[in-house]
Amino acid sequence: MIKHIVCWKVDKPSLSKQYCENAAALLQQMREQITGLITLEVNADTSRADKSADIVLYSEFENWDALAHYNQHPLHLDFKDYLGPYVTERRMADYEI
Image (cartoon, rainbow, N blue to C red):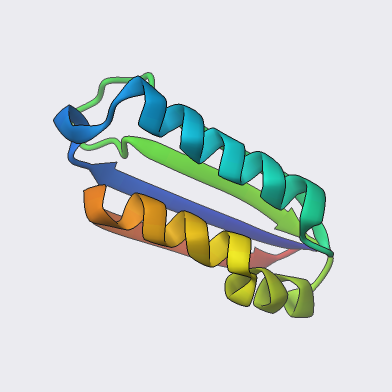
C-alpha cells in the first residue's frame, strides 16, 4: 500500500464557500472513479498554528502503479487546475507500507 499526503498553504481570502463545495465534488468523483484509489480524505486545518498547512489531502493506493494512474487521471488534473491559482505553498510525501 502507498500513502500519498499533500499539504497546501492557500490564499484564504480568495476561497469562497461555493469554491470549497466544488472542490469537494471533484474529490468525491475521484473516490468513485479512480482505479486503485483506496482512501481519499481532504480537510482544512483546524489547529490554527502559525506554521500549519491550510488544507491536507491524505490518500492510500493499492500500489505505485495506482498512484501513477491517479497522477495522470483527468479528474486529478482537474482538481490541480482548480486549486492551483490559490496555492501559495505545496508539500507532499509518498511512502510504502
